[in-house]
Each structure stands twice: as structure tokens, then as C-alpha cells.
Length: 137
Image 1 (cartoon, rainbow, N blue to C red):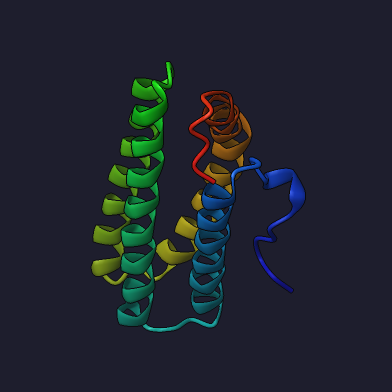
Image 2 (cartoon, rainbow, N blue to C red):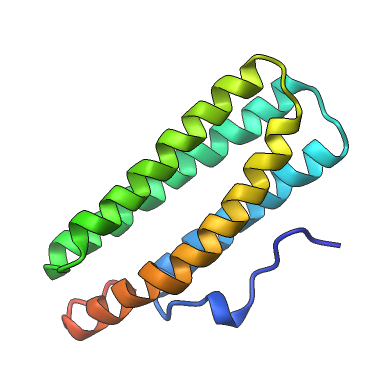
């Protein structure tokens, strides 16, 4: 059974953002599975680093879309992104201290954060992008 399942309710209606979210969910699932299988900290750390890197790239793409469309919620949305990345960095440090349980906690955090962020922030952003007629899909 897949830990975190993509479904149409998570779609924001923007192809690029939806694709990024699906890729993030895939990496979260990979992290959760590796933690569940009790993979060593090096493997978990590599997956967490890929997750951090991809998340950073995704946030950069979203923030560029916000700038291009003059999105009024830009600063708040960007703060949400920054807070998550800071939290993942702290979790990476805990994992580096060989606290294997952190990987599963991280997957659980990201599942919750992504789901709530998509529903409460990214759907609003996608609507604003669509309305701006510069709809980067």
C-alpha cells in the first residue's frame, strides 16, 4: 500500500504545479518506505536531500509564477515555503545524528504539510495564475 496517494482533490488545476506535487509525493513515499524498511541513515539522508532539493526547486518555480502574475499573497506564501525548508534542514541534522525515526517523522510531516498547503495556498495561487492570463501550465 502506498503511504501518500495522489488524488484529483489535490490537483490545483495547473499542470506544472500538479506535476511537481506528484513528484514530491513520490519522494515522500520513497522516504517513508525506506524508513519503514529500516534502511540505514545514509540512504535515508540521500532521499531526504533529494526531497529537499526538489522541494526547493518547486518553491522557486511557484515563487517565480507568483512574481510574474503579481500574486497578492506572495510574501505569506513564500514565508510558508521558507518555514518548511528550515524545518527539513533541522530534520536532516537530526537524521545525521543517526536518529532513524526522523525519516518517518519527516514523511509524516511532509504528507500533512503538502496536503494542507495545496488545499489552503496552492489552489488559491493556481486560480490567480489562471486569472492573470499568463497561465503557465
